[in-house]
Image (cartoon, rainbow, N blue to C red):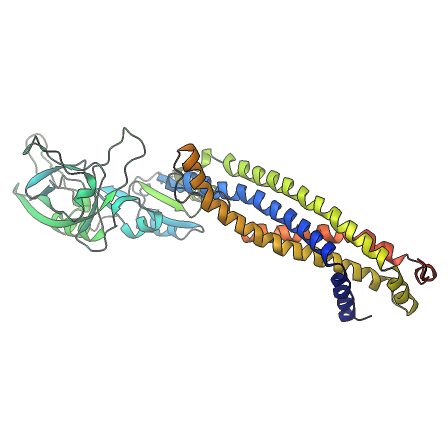
Length: 443
């Protein structure tokens, strides 16, 4: 008996009992959909809590404090170290923040700006790492800067006026004054005009203030080309208290970076990256080292919800077993005819297994589609219900239900496997039907 004939026989028999078939497929679809929706809650909460709340830069960042070496110079993090760290697997970005080693006396329209220093950073790396802004954008030109959320104009000139808020700084022109002491003791100055294009995010801790000015590589080059020193550091000329003076490192000296961070692409990759970096001799610390149990908790949660959903699929299997048992009874005469003309028992068993597997497959497909619809409806409707009845605002990017492709595939495989198991016993029973009894017309 050809496989095509077996499929034709199955299709014809399924058409004879459309109502019973529909109810069986519906029960299977409900079980599969229940399994996917329940497990999707675990995936959704993990995505929202771990990848958003916990998986932000605070957790995905690995702080690097130096290298293990007896040589002070080699303990510094240089450009080669930064490039090497950027080449590691699952590393999204490597950032650094170095303070400009002089006060640039920033001013707007001649009015001094209260600030707590100027910091150089790599805006390309910060873009990958997710530099958070409360307003504006990151610099795209050499004369553009970002300022901290708490930066303000000095109120000394107009003490009765309220200083502009952070968002009012966008588009403002600011002057930075670079100074340098020549070897003969002469103080020289250079003004560099810049434009404020972004405002930093407000620090999450209420007692912290951010009034820094953040500059990029182009502005740093202008400052260093004028001072002829690293990070704009000014020299100290000899005097009676310091007869040798102080000559800061020149531009050709090895450059050392401070506040270096390795940013992982996901929170669950931090542990592996940290291990690899430690093996290379770096001194590091990561908050994620203290949060190893979070993903385990969500894994247990997803397994538990999936187990409850699987019970629903097993309950649906009772319907498949009942349908296939009745099919064997109703088709006893057809089975007897097939045996009489020489059909092999394995072919008869395969026919009923094909039918049960088709029921499971149809139920899985319908259940998966319904689960995606429910997931979309939950993510769209539940925030409105919470806001309406509980007066609590849900974050716009919060996800209650998330269905990854692997979850849908696993649910379909479970549904198909349960259907095959449910149909295996009726199929085996079909091969044991006696030909003579089956062909009796009075049965």
